[in-house]
Amino acid sequence: MTYLAELFVILLLTKIAAHYSVKLKMPSVIGELLVGIVIGPAMLNWIHPTTFINYFSELGVIVLMFIAGLEGDLKLLIKYWAPALTVATLGVIVPTGTAFLLCHNLFNFSVKASVFMGLVLSATSVSITIQVLKEMHRLNTRAGAIICGAAVADDIICVILLGIASSIYGTSQHESIWLMVLKMFLFFVIVLLIGKFIVPKFLSIFQDLNATESDTAGAMILCFGTAALAVMMGMSDVLGAYFAGLAISETDFEDHLEDKIEPIGYAVFIPVFFVSIGLQISFKGMQNDIVFIILLIITAILGKQIGCGLAAKMFHLSWTESNVVGAGMVSRGEMALVVANVALSSHLIDQNHYTAMILVTVITTLVAPLILKLFILKSNKKVAAKDAVSIDNE
Image 1 (cartoon, helix red, strand yellow):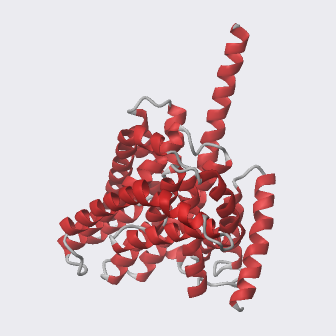
Image 2: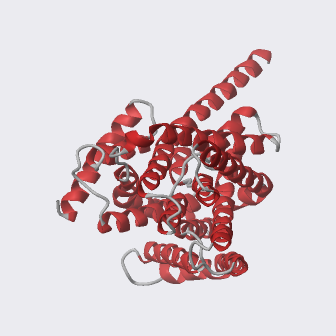
């Protein structure tokens, strides 16, 4: 199938699947993820994760997180930095520790392999969570701000832990941990200065250019430029894109640019990203590790749900809100795949267990939006019940 035919099939089927997902009262992203499973190697085998799909999906997740930043509230993020950091920390400790004990004690993995297995389960990717929060109008709430802040902290913690583990076990030629931390610190300083002093002037200049959609182009230049800077500094590209959007959200250009950029992302790039996740699933050889995979999936889900939920509860959120935070951190993503690739290339795990980890990553990503929607609906019911009681008492 040519790349144009692949794009035709993906865009057609994702929009139809998203439509029926919404009709069935499920997040639209579920339909798009399932399209990837159905047309990919797991079932029909029409489309494979080619270089074209990989690059297109990478652009999709970058644009998605850029839009999330545009719709974000920097003041809300700053306000809830302490619970966000605590949520990220416990959200790493609980699943990593549990997975280590599971792999080392129950399945007799080496200490090295168990450490890396645990690190795979520690990584959070909120790109899909962001989509569900947007659909359910929960992005700019206390729980939404904590999830976004915790995802940023989680990414940093995972990078640091990966560097430490690689240095200790000598699995690859990684730079020193202190250099990595210094580069991360410099990244945040540079982004802060760019956001405060350069972004407003840069967009003003582009708005005055006599060129078609120059202001939109200016925003996308900032998005990709900051994403590239993040990669240079050893961070995730989606983190850079998110901060670029957040910087623009503090300017007068926010609403105008949001209306321009959302169609670009949701019409073409973002659906390919969601499908690409489903394309990574293959059931070949799965029967040999079925018990291992099931236990890891349970560990991955409960580890984040319990760890992050308890951390949120420590800051006096209701149990319902705490569960929303926990569910919002369940999804895994690119950082989990990075850790799994490091473990495979360093011969700490074999190909079968690598496939198992990819399956765990994808399945938790599929399950996460369903769990999140369930807790949000439960939260909505409690709010409605409280409102009804207060009206009766008046």
